[in-house]
Length: 466
Image (cartoon, one colour):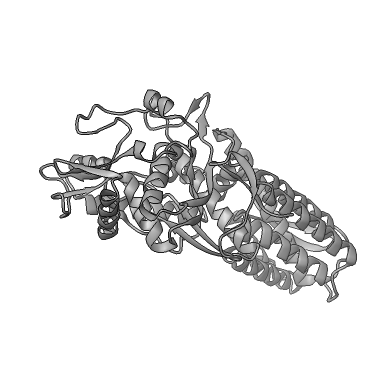
């Protein structure tokens, strides 16, 4: 099955065909770094981390760019409140962002450009738009002429009348039209600013992404993504100015994820009901948060609840127990090739997983397939005799699809921990055989302190987390 994605611009599923065969350019709008990110922000970064991983699994060479907006009104206001500089504030919250995302298993982008490091590229874009008549200058401010572009509104699928009626526009007598937006803002006294042909100032929000995406990914992007709240005005304005600037299509596939609800309300800063990731990490495992964010189709809203995440913790314990049991049986299993029935079942699970992800990147269904693989692993481990080959390919499957793609099964560090625990269990078995029960009990107590429970079974000693 060919990968199909829902393109926000066309409002339909389309076969995924990048510009250059096996190469994909992908730009995801990053955070404005004036505070810790909330769980709604995290949904964007976790989901598109999986999209990137799946594209790589499909054989694509992905260049992934995610920016930081490190200058805007909110950063300036917050820096004044905290009596610090915009640069120091941004640096603090960029590091906080990486702390949260590293914990949630989000791989770093290939490039994390910062707006403040790309002022020359933005000035170039603005000059071009002025030269072409798509922009105008008023007393040190520069605005984009939205109505000059005849198809303005094509991404959000709104007419000019609807946009004028529904847009939240502040009264600004400098603008020719309320829908026009700032490309360059004249600096106020004491604000961070840069020199420009129109006087000292700073860039508008929308021009930042147009300039940075073009620098690193070219005139036309294969994928541009973010939360649904960015569709208008940010992405609409990005597309308008970029296509006016380059005279080429800006994006082939626009992907937007849905909101997170808090009860019956959408989570938003204006309602004051946001939940910060760094606070949730103190209460729940980061993997449980990642699972929660992937547990619904990305375009659907998802309702946050503490009970849902507590149930997810139990699911993750089942994943870990299955992986640990496979490690244990592999260590004691006799050599032998994988059985045909095991190969066939894993091939079927692979087809099911790919079908889920190829159908508009349905991580919820992908997780369901992962659960099926864990159930099959438990059934296989429970058999009295299993060749090492069968156990090995089962473990490899769970690691590949549950770990490398979904990021829900720990690999690497967890494997190292499993080996340490297996070594202690073996040491305990040797102590018992030598009737050194004091040493055997000490090892059991040491494992218990780490939350490891030992269970005697016909296949030997198994372990699981408490």
